[in-house]
Length: 113
Length: 111
Image (tube, rainbow over all chains, first blue to last red; front, side, top):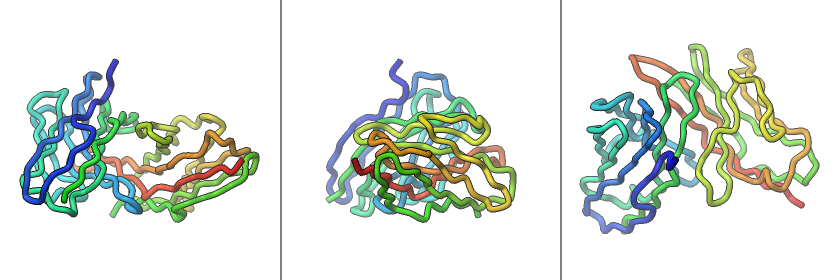
């Protein structure tokens, strides 16, 4: 049982380049989340999805787009990367929302130079 | 606005000493509180949730609605407890559910 898998694990981008981070879960979870983790800032919610075909903005959505075309996948896109987007990105999923455990991926370390 | 505050960035204790990681929250509705832990080179994982009222790895946390707190406690710290700890608040609204995290506290247990 793989759980939540993020691809890639590491990436270096040049300013202005685009890329897509993939999150895949095999637990048939409805909810999926993208967070970024920065030193001293904890985890901040970028976007989330409550089911296939739905997405919603979190706390820090600017500069990112997401899609949930399939229930098991949640994609995070950076259209024009900026150095301020250098961070560790975590994907998480949960069966439902209220009082259920969120399962996290291993993280993607992104550096924008 | 919903908010989770963890006042200590770093907490260092000696092995065998008691541990208390503080967490305060701001939410007008009925809160759902969690503690997540991230050990070195491992992914973030759930430690415990207030609704379960359980003890995991010797840790407990009690929801105090009067003080809007959910402090994590352990009577005797072990070296393997060294990790990053995040308090999280779950809340529903407008047909969705969000999980908001505090900034985290790094616990270092000194041998």
